[in-house]
Length: 95
Image (tube, rainbow, N blue to C red; front, side):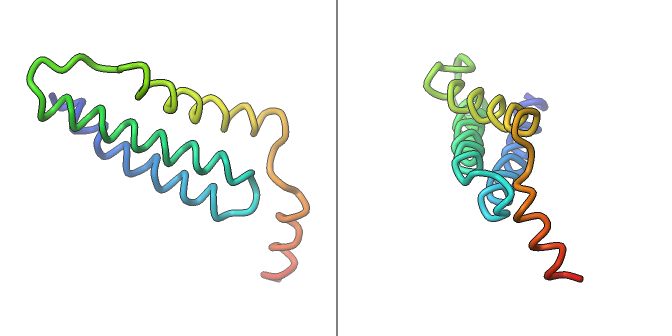
């Protein structure tokens, strides 16, 4: 039960990360959207565990968006990285 409550707070982290990825300009916006969808999946799953008796975790339609979002972002960082042009542009604007 305590872990399920912790995942509810983790959901807030995933949602904020998705929002920041979406607004940053350093990554494709779809990665931010995937994280927001993953946050909704976490939210539905964790609240269901807390509120519904005999709820079994991880239906495929909730787990799939979470997995896609959490796999796509690190792969993007490993393969493509951040948008260097946008990074340099913002660095020059702040200097």
